[in-house]
Length: 76
Image 1 (spheres, rainbow, N blue to C red):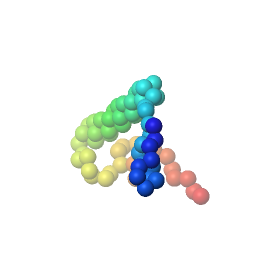
Image 2 (image 1 turned 135 degrees about the horizontal axis):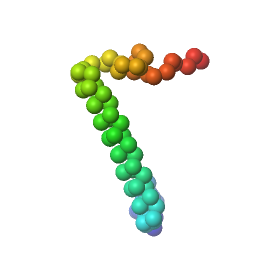
Image 3 (image 1 turned 45 degrees about the vertical axis):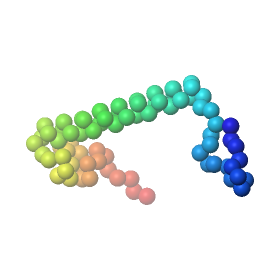
Image 4 (image 1 turned 90 degrees about the vertical axis):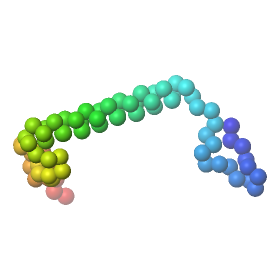
């Protein structure tokens, strides 16, 4: 419950009780996102090592265009 502090100030981070179901859903989403990001990083690192290049060489992987993009840039 939000309580006013002396001077009439309400803390911005005083959100009250947390719904356990909402917290569980948010936690599951965060873990799924972290897992997906980890897999993507692992795939990129494996591809770089497979082609014998350093991870920080800034060269595109084979089959990718300049800048590491797999499709042409959109013109606006």
